[in-house]
Image 1 (cartoon, rainbow, N blue to C red):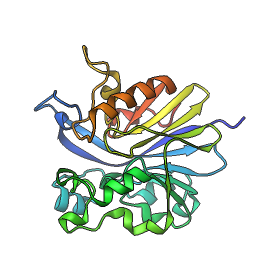
Image 2 (cartoon, rainbow, N blue to C red; image 1 turned 120 degrees about the vertical axis):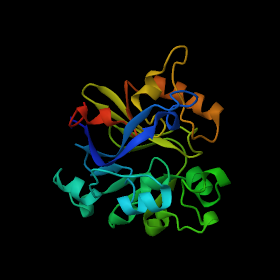
Image 3 (cartoon, one colour; image 1 turned 90 degrees about the vertical axis):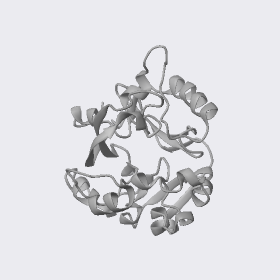
Image 4 (cartoon, rainbow, N blue to C red; image 1 turned 45 degrees about the vertical axis):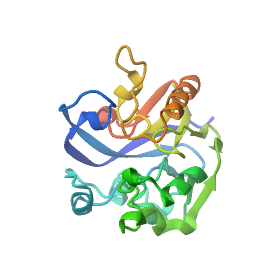
Length: 250
């Protein structure tokens, strides 16, 4: 049986991020460095990546007022793993916030898998979420449009390859999806912004888990936590520098 592994790529670091922007209702004023992470799944028949990261530092600072250090373009990060963008067969977008789909157009030969509910909301988000999507509502061009011809819409859970399943876990966004990977050490859920930090999953008493302050539906969010508890042994977050304590997982 093929052994699956998960390799994180660091595209950059946003320094001095307020931790309260990742952990709802706590850690106000606590500053941490957060990472921009893309995950590569190795060992399947297909070459699969999860999310495509954000734009370059100039874009990030101009439009999102976020400084980005240690920047590495995604093609360069893939190259360190022996891959070229044209080698990628499947791109799984956990959601369509700008910092998770900005480079979709790099992957000319890939299927780009998105939940139907997600693209529906990305087209017409609530005003408070418009900047996250770089929405036309604020006179921007959403980055996912650059590769719209390659987008494949799905509804709900779906097996992508043996041992690799997309699981719909709404809450952070309406069509949020994680990727559950069966490895020799158990199931790893690539959770992205569903759990931006390990702490979101691990919780802080009396909270079993901690939601992101960026969300569309808290009831969905907590139901999704319950779903993940049943299917995953480990969770890999979307912005935690601690992810890079290991070169790959498991």
